[in-house]
View 1 (cartoon, one colour):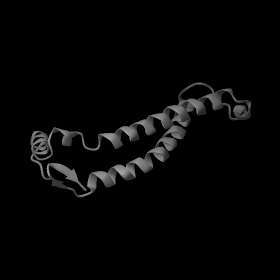
View 2 (tube, one colour):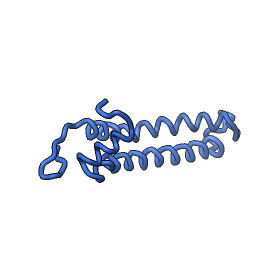
View 3 (spheres, one colour):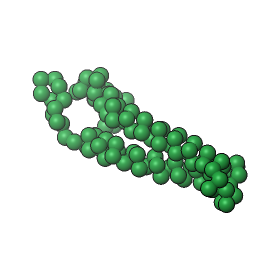
View 4 (cartoon, helix red, strand yellow):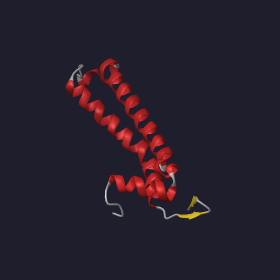
Length: 108
């Protein structure tokens, strides 16, 4: 790594890129968080509702409790990973792309 610690990283980035450089990547990370939370909460709620209340799933015998919670968490985890994958690819490429400074602005 090119920094000697957290303090050195903050100091170096602030000096070379300005304070704005400390916030690089915040936009795509925010989008990723929105996608993850939306998928997680929606699928967990809907799958729990379906398993517990829909007569089509009554033969499975799910009742409110830790087993139902675990099954619904697996469904929501799968949805979360599926929703996050495109944002993760974009974020990784943005974080790893080379850049240079032209007239005090980051280019690349």
